[in-house]
Length: 268
Image (cartoon, rainbow, N blue to C red):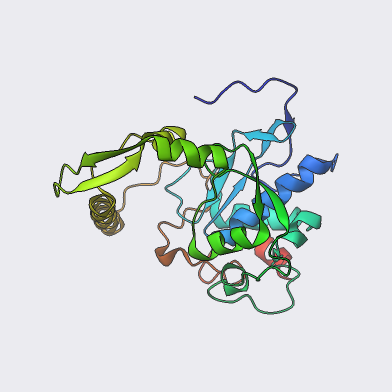
């Protein structure tokens, strides 16, 4: 259960392309965030239905190409198209180098490399940048070059307070599987709302791999023995099933049946 957010709630967008007509700063940021989630996940999902109080967002809906996830409000590919039909890129979209598929002059790269692998080296390495700590979510200040390096290696950025708390709460413990000793921070896992690990990172990685393989096996059995669809088709009319490799090209909807001629309108 999330914490109570005091104040007057405002809705910024929904899961069917609607946008708040006030077009205030929070609406612009919310729209850019939805756009960002689509591009960052290579078209696999998009976070929409954003609402909250003065920038504190809550209760979202996720469109995902795997229709088995995120409930009946997941409209999948269709929901993503509806978003872009009404979305106009703003200054935040431009600052994040986001691509609008309807207005992009070139054909979208099959691997979405136009965004994922282009991290520019900052011109001023000592320039200070304000950013939320990836652990406590509080305000922090980093150099632009430090953020660049962390992004290159896929590491999170922690504020000074969190770094000190992590160092002060590190404990040595024995892995329950391989019996090897490993270290972990109680503070770090607590703030991430995760149980303190009983196993080392390598054993946890192997366990996740095993669970994924079992899930894929179950999905294969389900595909070979489909059950009657009892889903509310008005809410989830884009039940395409599990998409492999999470590599979806929004502008190449081969073999997808989009209702209401939305795709024709989108790509005309």
